[in-house]
Length: 318
Image 1 (tube, rainbow, N blue to C red):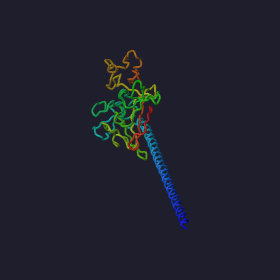
Image 2: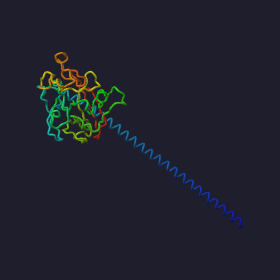
Image 3: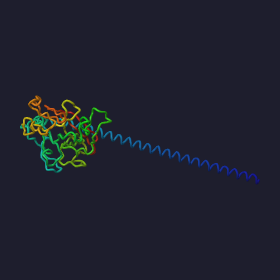
Image 4: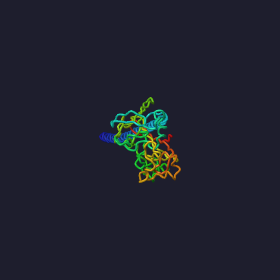
């Protein structure tokens, strides 16, 4: 009897030990499975979050592209239909001033902005950011950037000549790409287009000086675009040019060809006697030193979504 009780107690102890081991194994297995499920849940969460952010970024970029494209079409229309984004005065505060006609040509009130520009090609627009200098407050088109090529924040030219330019003829990995961030602070003049959800456009020209850190609603739109014009190479659609202020016939009291003497315009072919091209010249390409009878009009547009620049377009519009 005693032996039976002793055997029974050993059996119970053995069973208790085995049950304890099983419970420990189940606990460890459960913890491992719980950890795996937690890791899977975190992976799914971050994967979904990244997908959402990627989708949001793609959507913003797409919206900004269409805003920039809208700006290009708008400026083409504005030039042709005399939208009056040309010469104007302002007080130096951040209040958009009224637009007005330039002083020349005499028929400015009855022709489109593009025709006004054609009649006064030697001075297309401002060349500096300033509240007081005439270069910053006058010009045929206030949103035209004719600043020196080497100092522009954005341009398309030969990178071997201007290291700040984007040379589209070279491999993308070796191009110098300008940043869209705070680009408004670097521009002489531009038009701000606020584009509402219903497609309506409100144009303004921000007053000077431009803020170093762009202010939404003043320097840049919350949703819309900023756009400006530059001179394009008439022989190469992928290049910009810098136009010297030149008025060979002195029709508007501008810089005559003789101003090249003494180094004022050192790269211009100033020999109007021996150069037959001078007879039809309207401007001088500061990069090549050649007389130009005309030049391309290039539009640059940056699209903004929620006050952030997300896409940039360049288009030859004339």
